[in-house]
Length: 428
Image 1 (cartoon, rainbow, N blue to C red):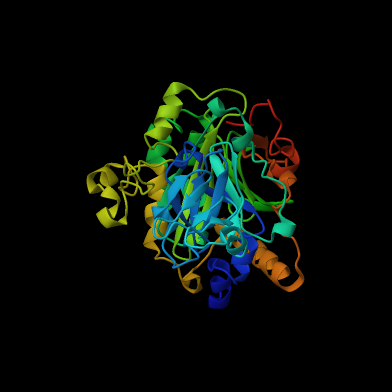
Image 2: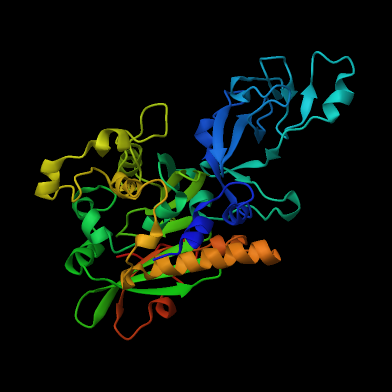
């Protein structure tokens, strides 16, 4: 169980909170690049870490992320006209550039002098891969840009989606480092999902429902090793990396692309789940990419024009009791992404962890909570830079391997869990 005060510290991410300050040390996904597809396109409303913001792309292709509300009378700039290198409020014509600087107030005679003193809160917005990334911390401490492998491979080798998840970021993230639930919740998907099926590792998952967990520290977070019995004298290891605060990778299966997630707080009761697939040495096939678009694997089928899943809490995730009984969907919910989301959202907006009864299989979750708490307090009390800020910490991979009983997973897989451009993944 977790004390209520610690649960409060780990789950609250708004301005002025320790965990909010921690998130503001990192570059993190703000939106998908597809949301701002061309110069002067419509702006996008965003809420990140409980701040209401507007993202837009100006006439010169520059990206901006600024306070949603006009400094004049507080109207939302989502209604703004994106034109001539700025976003103009339609109420009285005040105009802002991508830095948040007011550049025109039509009603003022001494326009330039007045404008100099009007500037909205603004954050940098940078395209890397399929994502537009932002840094919401102290500009003087802005770290180098992120270097996660999935965002740096050629476009034909990667695909990223996002979906709304209606619960606190922490309970969504904790599902990302919990390998023990796969044997149960995703048992149907291991057999039928086109982005999972056919791998030898699936057999090991199904044949040993009592994994042993070993957790090792890394420079950027943790490596969570889940061990299952394999052939005589051997273990099947699935190694999940976590890079603070919210990046996880799913261990690979066969030659399928590698999956992973970011869990980004919208506010304390909602988060964005960014899900990616990539292959480090080949292009995604047409069938693989289409499966991702259709919501297979770690992706979801979303309501057209939105990033809210078609299966959601308002329709009980389209649960099918017949398919639950038959075992096609172990929980009755279709799709690996929504199987996870349905149960995580069922806990409530912020789960009361003081009622938990954790077991050894939860070792990764316990260690991650400890590391998050320690980092947030060290930042608050001493200004200590947390793990995961340095781009060197981003160069990790997940791995799935079969090892002799005598070998330590981390010693044997030290090279396998580091990015080696142009080299294949370690997978079973």
